[in-house]
Length: 500
Image 1 (cartoon, rainbow, N blue to C red):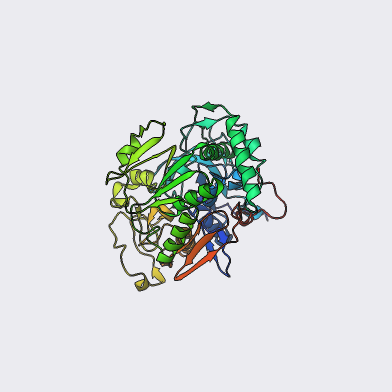
Image 2 (cartoon, rainbow, N blue to C red):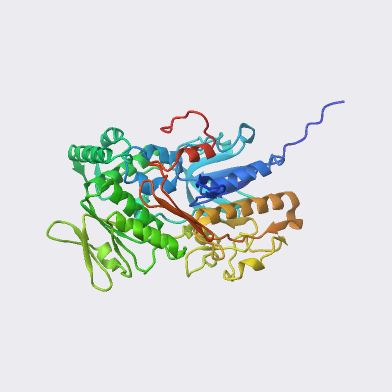
């Protein structure tokens, strides 16, 4: 009697657009850990890969425009302090295990999306930039497009980054790349005043030896291009004698305090439109941040809103500095103006593909049900958090196979922060797993956001963090913000080279 071979089940794709580090943890000096995040693609991908081990017919495809995971939390520090920038970009090749080799991470631009497919333009031809071998049906040449059908999709494109840390946006002036080797000679300056002086001398020498050119980084999402961008930002920080920072959120505060500590002779001004820094958090966070800024001689201006027309069309004073004006009429001049405000949800592609009603017009975020499934119907996002049941039967929804998570989702008042995005990725992965295994009889988890939590650096070693009602201040920070922990979380162990 002959052997009857079972016909393999057709491959079903679970597409995740946006491959940042959702669910990776930064360790705070306490028993728990708090995740940081801009998008949540990798958290959801890893959970799904683990939970669907017994469903080999499902293949996870993560799509991101960057060749490496961009560790955004360190961008403010590394855009000012040289010598660590290469550590901010982590390869994706340890995300899935060898037994999960069917799953893919592809570097590509997302061009369009429908209710059952995405169309992408891969950055390099014929191969995955990250992991796995691209099947023949997904192969394409550079500059061409390929459409990938999906059973389920997670839209995790986050929000646009503010200009001071947006490696995809050109800087005004870039210098010769030789500065990288000079910057690598900079040693730790946080131990003594002599070290700090040596650092400033070296940076001034390196800046003076380089010719200025009007040029842009031809960004292709690669690690070398992103490193070059951070190096250019460092040179801008070294060259500017005066800096005005607009926006008193975490980014503005971190850039102001780091710049002031690395370059204590520079004139640093922070302008904020309200009377409290980081107003969505405990006032004790504001008080500690304000005290730290003033201790570092940062001029803090509260309750002043910038006239954005003077930013878009800046004038110059007699010394060549840019001049901006507030709504009340106050003027400020500086060599560099850094806007740390105004991020926008990256919802354009899903809105164009599924209809503009999937986006809340008041905030630009994608509308979701409590199950984090995308909907085109207005939802009451102000419903009390505690009224949500943990599981509900799967019900008809306009797009039952598409989920939105992270900063792009209009997630019922959740703070745009890592600890909220982490749980959204977890809820989504659990719900997709339930739908795969149980179909219409599945019970789905509903998302409930947690209490406020954040960590803000206030100089190289000093920081403040809030977890719910608890606010703690510390002084044991390090220059590179323990970046090796992120590499560990992405599968790198033992001795490894962060230049890869």
